[in-house]
Image (cartoon, rainbow, N blue to C red):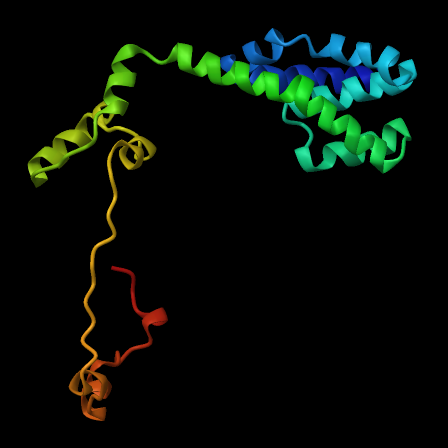
Length: 189
């Protein structure tokens, strides 16, 4: 069996493990045509374009760390680092950013109106019983981000007493406040 065949099997398996929204976003952008178009624009050879396509597919399927993408391209395509940086920026602009936009659209489309309405409402808990109701029905709990962005925020005012009595404490008070047991060796409560 050929190495390319094994790699292709690994790519297909990783692709199958992606979420449906991710697969749809990747398929919605014709990124292979963008790569082929670079032959006329940049003058890359077919071998270099195959390497670019393979490394891009590995990245899209999660088999290649994004930090390693430029290094792998430089090693496989055998072109200088400045050209690789230019190529990576072009791929970001023409492929990856469009896939990201498509992924956001797919996720937004999948949300039901009920979920959108819940996220827009701030969470107000008045008592312990109401809090327990929210815990029992987790679909009613809005996300932390929506809570933070839904209203205004004010840092509480703290007043500090700068009097002489407050600044000097007796050594006996300080000793009594020190823990008698090493806090790192105390049992977890």
